[in-house]
Length: 132
Image 1 (tube, rainbow, N blue to C red):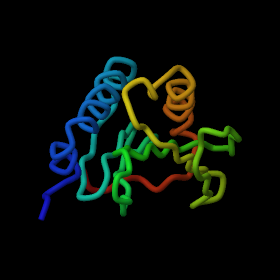
Image 2 (cartoon, helix red, strand yellow):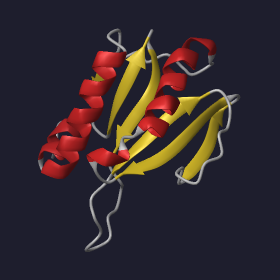
Image 3 (cartoon, rainbow, N blue to C red):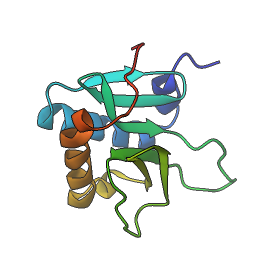
Image 4 (cartoon, helix red, strand yellow):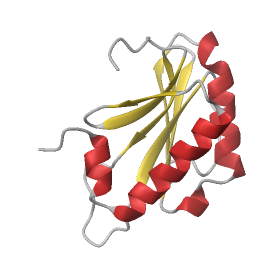
């Protein structure tokens, strides 16, 4: 049994490379970010509120290329073909899910959405993380 998601990432070097690039980029852009590594996800948190969560797919089909799932917390729905799913788990809190297959997928569009999420997170009603 893996203790946390980081252990799972270490088993797939391609995904670990993507995660490390994401982590480094976000730490440079948002030094106040706290990283909360849990059993099935890694949350990027500012002022006790997550603005981004990284997870692995629950099931992977045989032969399928590995990928990370990025979930961006926003206060409004953004429609873009790169989002594989958009949900509203709380009123006015929209989760925008997309896949990262390689470091190059982490482009200016994604960084703009993450920047928006980081700036908005103080204004949303997302529940505070009580354990990190």
